Image (cartoon, rainbow, N blue to C red; front, top):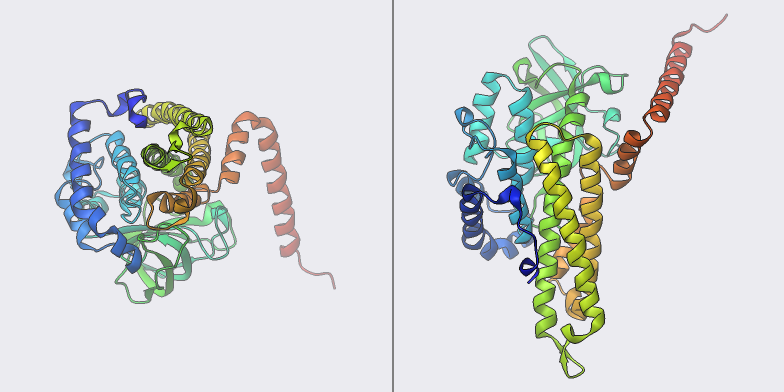
Length: 413
């Protein structure tokens, strides 16, 4: 197995890490994997799995204990996601709940918001989702159209979101909205929207290429009244919050890609030792050996860089460019590994009941969500060419101002 040549992961080396890792593995083997195939048919997991995860303390593990969390550092929550990915348990949406939604509330929420929302999220009573992507807006989050109009003691929200992970089962959605229509990033705010609010509806789970057991759907808001106290952070600062927290989200995607690639490689090592062709196991062929060597090397390099990024995240030093590099490289690596491993499986790799087929399908979206890999390259280039990108931004603002001034100018008689 690949683990026979892998370097020791110091980020997960403590005794407490190992205890939690074993608890996660026991949980997955007993409570998740026996039912995952049925969940793929249902297009969602059984809600009871969230309660069981909450009872075991596997949700919101790095949130403060006073709000129901585990009070641990971020490496524990990332480790849990990596293990889940290594098991191929792509249906459970704990990663978005714990590593994306909860940190927004933990960092920008009021004491009252943390008490109300984090406690219910840590227990698994409430499932969280994040409402960013819209039918006409993906990575360009400044251009969202969902509006929130100030109506005194509440906001009135209208709009729609799509591709929302945990959307169908969600109880709470951190919703990105425009509170200042007509503006770009200055007009984006974030609201804590409870899903039982009148006017809030959900579409049916979307049928996807992969991640079939993970509920993903559209959300619709028609005159939804959200109390003013559910504003997360400051009004108009939502875009800044999203840009800040996306670094952690992208690192989380990276650890999941590492877990997925490791599963693909280990499954394939086992397969090539068991599958016979031309008088012996296909592991005897030099092509097989070289492909395995290449994949193991790519995986080791990915682990080393991501581990370093994890250390930087723990000390709040991880930059957007570093997280983008991690996301870009590991997701591309996972795609290559899954593709090569499927090839080594031959025709069986194309059959859904084989894990490598699911792995291949599940891996594809990682190059799209949390910002496409093309966007990752833009962000990385900004760190390499800061003066150029600053000048381009200045020119864009000047053009926008000229356009706005022209529109406001009265027509001549």
